[in-house]
Structure formats: structure tokens, C-alpha cells
Amino acid sequence: MLEDFWKGLGGKFAERWLTALFSPAFAFWAGGFLAWLYGQGWSTVERLGWLGALRQWTADARGLPFLAQALLVVGLLIVLTLSGLLLQHLSRPTLRLLEGYWPPRATSVREWSRRRLSDRADGAATRLRVLLAVPPDTRSAVETAELGRLRGSYQQVPPRPAQRMPTRLGNVLRAAELRPGSRYGLDAVTCWPRLWLLLPKDSRQEVAAARTGLYLSVQSWLCALVFTVFVVWAWWAPVVGLAVAWVTYYTRMLAAARTYGTLIEACFDVHRGLLYSALNWPRPANPRAEYAAGQRISAYLSTGSRQTSPTFIDPPPTMTVLPS
Image 1 (cartoon, rainbow, N blue to C red):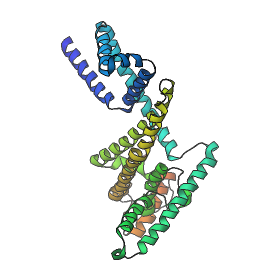
Image 2: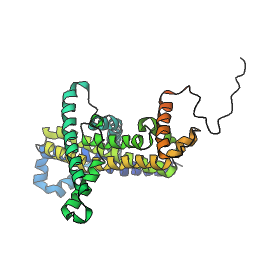
Image 3: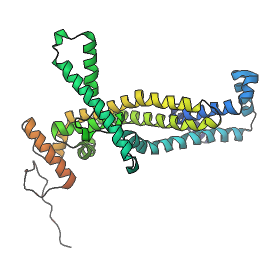
Image 4: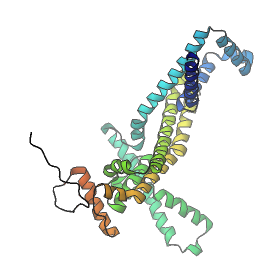
């Protein structure tokens, strides 16, 4: 029985290590170890080379008692696990910060950044209208490529300046958040938690995977930013950290936000009828009626209603209150 216990424990440790090896926390601590080597243990590397230094450290670790080796492995796993848990805890507030939800003290900076991005978006929209006015058969290859790029960027910015955020990431997510309201009258902030409970399993898995990808990019960005503290050992730590943070933001994070926002829009496009059915709300007959019905549903879910309309479909049976 003890043998089976140790086998199972070893399998769980191997699974934990495999998960930890592909986490932002592992990359952070591995980079910190290299920075420490540069500042403290570089003489050993210069004397023996990388392979020789690794052999020596490995031999030193093998020379430790079995209990010490076990404690070393467990300690490293605990550090990685706790670091991962801390990153998960910080993912949401960090994402909100990157979206542009800044404290009141930063109002002036927020407005300056929002106006700058808003002016750029308005200029791109003007250029897009000019290109759309050109007949398709007379557009050059350069104009066609520019038209495709501007169409994509136009979808990533809220239509009204007052709705725009001071960061590109915030605009991407805000634009996706506003589109269900502009199309169907459904306020995404109010309706999304309810719709999420009704989604089919496959749809929930796709959205959850996209959300996980977005949070992983946020964690990678945060680790890269904090990596700059290793400047105490290596002068190049801030350069590497800021470069990785910049690349992560403009490649992984924005792409993950676009994917996540697109999937949320798709859920409203395809499954919004589930919300009507779950609320026993009559289905609208046409898009114009649907927009008005969506607004009423959003208000109903947000503040409730005491009105006698609309009449529910298949209303639940009346509950009888028994005397106490």
C-alpha cells in the first residue's frame, strides 16, 4: 500500500512540475537565477563554462542527503506554486489597470491618453471612409491592403469618443463589450453572467480557454515588468524585462483580447435566444423589435420591474404561501 502511495505521490509531483515548467512564474525565476549567476556566480561559469558549472551544481545537489534533496525539490515546487497563485490573484486587477481603469489621481493622464488614441482612431475612420468611396475595381494593391487593416482596427475602437478607453487593450475589450448592446439592445455587463450560465458546454470551454489565454498573457507581462528588480545583480535585467513586456502586450495580449472579445460577441450572436427562453420572455418578431426587447431585458435584469408587460411565456406556477 505504501508503494502505491509513493507512486501516486510521485505522479502528482511530476504533473505539478510539468505544469510549473510551462508557467510564467518558472520563466521569471529562471531568469532571476541567470541574473544571479551574472552578478554572483559568474566566476564559476567563466572558470568551468556553462556545462561544467551545471555538472558541478548537479553533483553538489546529488551529494546532499536524500531528505535534503527531497526538501529542495519540494521547496522549489512550493515557490513556483505560490508564485503562480499570486499571479492568478493579481491577474484581474492588473488587467483592469492595463485596460485603463486608473485611480482618480491619474485622471489628467487618462484623459490625455484617451484623447490621443481617440484622435488617431478618428483619423483612421476618416481614411477608411475615403478608401470605401473608391470603386473596388480601381483600388490599388496598397489601398486594398490598407483598407483591410483599417477595417480591422475600426472594429477595435468604440464608436463614440466618450466610450473610449486610454489604452489599446481597453478599447479592444470595450468595443466587444458594447457591440451586443448596439446590435441587440443587450447590455453585455448585465446580461453576460446570466448568458454564461446557459451556454452549451463547448461554447463555455472555448470562452474559458480564451479567457485563460488572456490572463496568461497578463501574467507574462507582469512577470516581465517585475523582472526589472533583478537589476541589483544584472544591468541587463531592465532591458530584457521591458522588452519582453512590450512584446507581450503588443503581440500576445492584444491578440488574446481580440479572440476573447470575438467569442463573447459570437455567444450573443448565436445563443442570445437562450436568455429569452430562460426568462420566459417573448421572442421579438424582427430586428427592430429585438433591439427594444433587449433594452427592456437589460433594464429588467439590472433593476427589476413592476410592469404588467410583457406577458411571460409559460409562466411558472403560482406559489402558495402556507400560514406560519
